[in-house]
Amino acid sequence: MLLLSYRRYIALLIVVFVTCFILLLHDLDHLRRYNLVHLSPSPRVESPPAVLSLPHDYDLVGTSETVWCQERFGTRYLENARDFSASFCTDESTSRFTCFFSHTAADNPPRIDSMCYGHRAVFDESLHRFRLGCDIQSPTSDEMARGVPMPTELSRYWYETGPGFVMNEAVLLDSAVSKGPSQITTILVKREGSSNVWHSLMEIMSLSWSLDVLQIGADTETGNPFLSPEAGPTTQVVLLDNHEDGPFIDMWKLFSKMPIRRIQELNESEPLSDIIIPFAGGSNPLWQGDWEDIVCRDSTLVKTFSSRVLSLYGVATPIKENNKVIVTYIRRANTRKLINEDAHMEALRNEIPNMILNVVDFAAISFAEQLKIVRETDLLVGVHGAGLTHLMFLQPGSAVLEILPEGFQHKGFRNLAQMLGISFFRAHAKMHGDASGNNQWQFDAVELDQQRFVELVDFGVRSLSNNGKKSYDIL
Image (cartoon, rainbow, N blue to C red):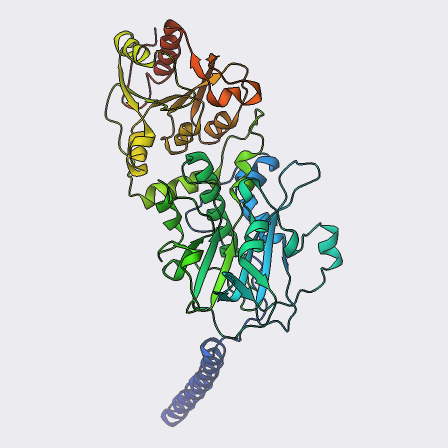
């Protein structure tokens, strides 16, 4: 019996050993296969990803805005431009030239706005132009059906700006150029001017969005974005115009760490470069509907741009500890001045309680100082003009009072305030001056009865009496 039990014990041990050995072999084979699959280099992906993420500073919270608003003031504007593109060079060309389009303007005939990206451009000093080795290919039937313009037909805007003028003055699609990787990126800019903050911000904002489109658009040759977020140190802005630098020149450094240059300063030693021709300021959707009351109540595009500008200038958002309403009145030095302005300001100080009044000539101080003042402002007051563009940088919950020349029904600042969560009030004033015709509003001074002016500002102050640290009865 003992012998039988011993034999059974030995047999059981053998069965257990064999079973464990078989399981070990199976696990080793599985592990080997796992390593072959997961540790081998990934094959190169030839086709570009279908979707690339928006720049990280966009707020991707869902929106209840209408499609019309999203396509002009939300991230759908960027995505639609990315998806509406055309490449114009044959496969045999040594360079590439791709344009992206936006179709939001209600012009008749319909206007197609454009921005473009050129790969491997050589600067020709004798012509002061960038040359791309691009043999133009015929458009596809789909491109023709969508109205894609050829490079010689790109959009043009006021003050001789826009891709059409940039192409005509600074870019040639003709002879072959040396192959090789581009070493820098050059943004070609032709400005409308240099002193008007509204026009300048429309241009810089349009460039900002152009670069966003390139970050979410995949280059079919590499599968990567046309433009990397880390490209700043090797990116330069080259100005084609002859305007002075102006007070907003530093804002162009939002996009490039290299010095801003004039095209006349370039020479034959310039390295091979990619070029960017941005959407023009005149194509900015904020120009659309500026004579109408639009219903858009949110703009991720404008809010993100505003944050970028504040970050560039290092302007923090102050905590409004003051229990009084801070009113900033924009003083105009030339046109559309408020008659009896000094007396009106004194009346405000004497008659409105719980208020601190600042009277500021923005043209007399740096833009960084302007931003700091605006971030501390509760109520921004001014006669219609570019100075009211500063409402873009007010803190949420602030308010704007716009004084318009009689009969003038511009809605641009009203619409912008609504998109940013800023309360908006307006009033019309009589015009006084020698100007006449449709442009009278641009030059004539405006007149408001002093008591009416005090009541208007008091209304704005009262509307903010329970905002933040403030807590007052309104009556």
